[in-house]
Length: 263
Image 1 (cartoon, rainbow, N blue to C red):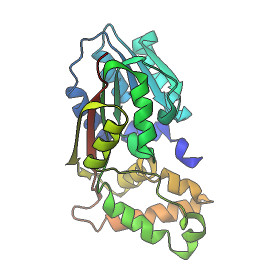
Image 2 (image 1 turned 180 degrees about the horizontal axis):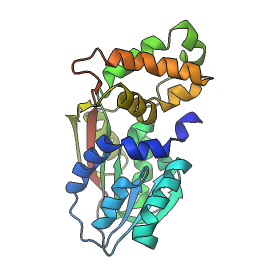
Image 3 (image 1 turned 180 degrees about the vertical axis):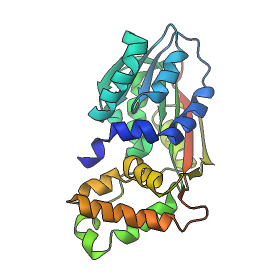
């Protein structure tokens, strides 16, 4: 499936916005330093490294659905952290762990999961009594402007046979729905909030690389040849050049925190 694999080399280079948002989430964690944690959707490991730096006596299990991402994360993390980082290619909706972790950290991942109730139940099962979840993902009106443009482009004759019936691969939940679903999964002390995170790219080249790598790679993967993919991306980029400011993305981040009841 196109959406399961990523260009990890490009993502590692262009993911400064995701790292910046994730660093803010990390700053909210009060860690002893000896916890066993799960990084749910580790990507290329840039934030996993920050997490491990705060766990001098702890360990992190880094999981991702993309083999490319896991390979990049392993190469990035193992030289510095050795066996304190372990890796697994698993779907976060179906984690093979039961009461295994003191906490779960995740950023820029949950919106790629279309069905959140089984996701939250999976996370709940993986946590020990008293364990915590701190996460952030896209939410609410995230990327509304870009999504509208893509919806219009999909109806064009040259794209519609490949994209016309393709549903967007994201779930951008709202705080109220996410809170209810977390509670239904068994979590307590649930807190959710939505915050704007407008992101400005330097120029057309940076915008095109970022959007093709971090947002629209599933759509582009459904187009049958490089020429059509380049044409689609060029049209999206040309429209972004007319924005004020140019090459900006209207990101919104959904913050989630919750705990498993203590034993």
